[in-house]
Image (tube, rainbow, N blue to C red):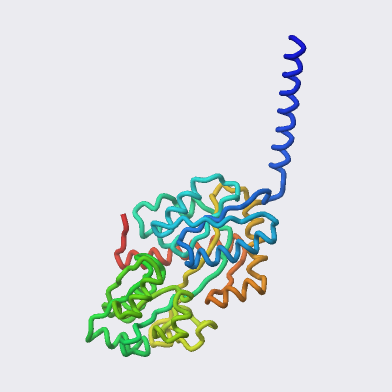
Length: 326
């Protein structure tokens, strides 16, 4: 071999050795060693987006690594879920989604993923009850008034969409508990549903509470009931469904973080621990409370059990209603 060729070969060997050392060092670096992407399953300004941004900013400060928020809305959260399920199981792409994750396996004939086998729940971030409100010109003040009125007048309720937990909560309250027929009108989000109620185009709306909190305070919609066992601090004057004379319900819109099922256990444990750290921060709790959310938290095993129970609960409601989306 000529001297130039020997020099080139030596240079290539040195480069290969340097790359091997760099790769090994990166692989052994503590998580996270690079920016983390939060893939939010819904549009900006919704519960998943708001909570994802609050949590993401605090994690970014904790880690010293960027947390990049990307919204991938569509198909009730399924588009983002499919993308994460098929992605690299390394902890650098995290699904941020809502309780729709627990509804979709029974609502969609083929959501594109298997919720309990394709994902691991990192942890539960925040929860809020759903809220049923009335149009200001309907002339009602309570849920009892609505139930009585529905027996003599045709009413309709709007929601952020078919299969959302606010939709299913209202179906449970009206159809199963009160045993009255109030048809559902799906909208493309909580905002449009509330606008329709304020404009008198629908009599009622059922939404995740934060979407309506400021409208309630401004007197633009009439609050009827929250779907939680206890009244909520953000709207302390609004009664629960149980206080309205029906069976108590405990239906919530929650936000949680998920990763692909094959993500290393130590990465999931790190994510869970750090999520719990940030949602215990007084500033985060205050931000949650201001918009009507409560911090959740708990171990990864607790989160797994909770989501599994939610999947079973909403499957029963979907089956009773007879809902199915192709």
